[in-house]
Length: 126
Image 1 (tube, rainbow, N blue to C red):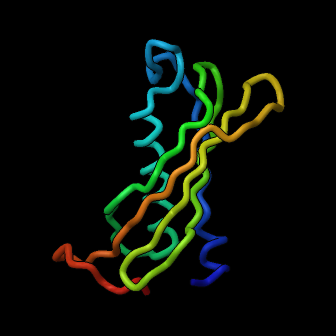
Image 2: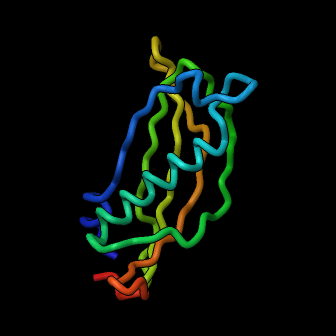
C-alpha cells in the first residue's frame, strides 16, 4: 500500500443539502447519504487503482448526527486497506453550516471494492 498513492487518491466532494433530498424531519435522507458515500468511495478506489472497480460490500455505517436541510456537506474518501484484488475506502461525511465556521462529523462508513477485468472477473490491483 503506497502512502503517496493513498494521498493522491483522497477524494473530497461538497454538496448543498436542499429540501428535495431530505426526509419528513427535514434532514438528509439516509439512502441519499449512502448513495453519495458509495459514489465518493468508488471515485477514491478508481483514483487509487486506475482500474475497473465494483462495490462488493459496505461495512457498518454510523449516522451520528442528523444533517439538516440548508447545510453544506463534505464527503471525504480515503483508501484504508489494499489487498490482492480488493481495497477498502473509508468515507466520512461532515456538516458545515452555510453561514458560520461550525463543522462536525455526521456519518462514517467503509466500502469494499474489487478490481475486475473486462469479463468481470477479479484481477490483481496494480
